[in-house]
Length: 120
Image (cartoon, rainbow, N blue to C red):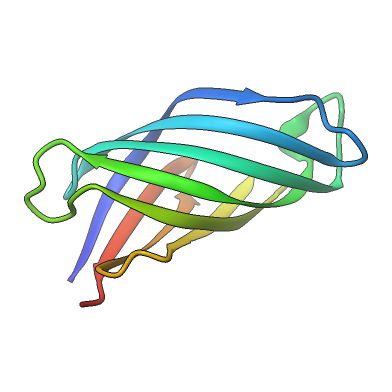
């Protein structure tokens, strides 16, 4: 069963890139089939950096995210490895490394969605 929810960015803090690499932290509100917050830390590698409009940049990122469930009805608390890419406004990524769930996120019509699938 796939559990799909909207993922709303609440906070984003990113360091100035040095040699195309920066560090970022983010906090997201998750609402829908699952409810809670996602706290993330990323190392970002800019393959193509647009300093005037970072949303037009191309990057890959790797980090860790912690999901804190509000109701634990489907997905409980857990830490995930977070890996993905951002290409000129399009985002996609995978949340893995959790023994019970695999997650993925993506943009669809400018809305970020998060899906969890139970694997155990």
